[in-house]
Every structure is written in structure tokens, then in C-alpha cells.
Image 1 (spheres, helix red, strand yellow):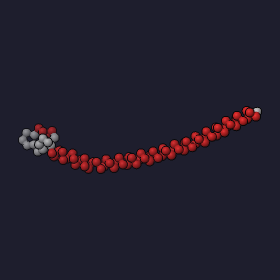
Image 2 (cartoon, one colour; image 1 turned 90 degrees about the vertical axis):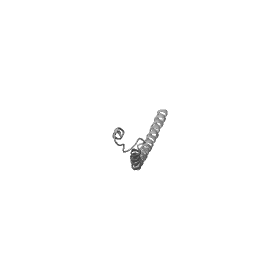
Image 3 (cartoon, helix red, strand yellow; image 1 turned 120 degrees about the horizontal axis):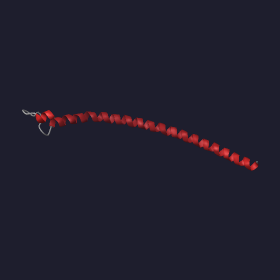
Image 4 (spheres, helix red, strand yellow; image 1 turned 45 degrees about the horizontal axis):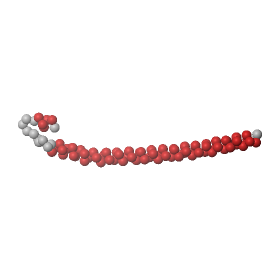
Length: 85
């Protein structure tokens, strides 16, 4: 573009830069599907990671609930033994 602007004899792409605009439009036309495919793949990976995180959190929740029931049982046993003791 700089050479075209400073060309003394002949400008092969005059000021509105139609050729440059055509080249950039072509580049956008072939790059956009590639970018969209990449984003779709990334969203699939994100969805799988979120599902894995959900399953991990669900298992942790169940384990914490089991521990809480066990502690509650121990506390109840301690209270009944202190009443009987």
C-alpha cells in the first residue's frame, strides 16, 4: 500500500484501494469458517470439562453428606452415652 501511495509514475490501485479491499475481503471469507470451527471445538471441550467438574462436585457432595451423617451419628451416640453414664 505504501509503494502504491508513493508511486510517481503509475498507481496500480488508486485511492479507494479496491484491490486491497478485495484481498482483505477474500482473507476474511476464507478465515471466518476456520475461526468458527475452532470456536466450536473449544466450546465442545469446555462443555466436556464442565460435565466432568459437575460429576466431581456431585461425588464430593455425596461424600460430604455421608461424613455429616456419620458425625451426626457419633454425636448422638456421645450424647446418649453421657445421659446413661
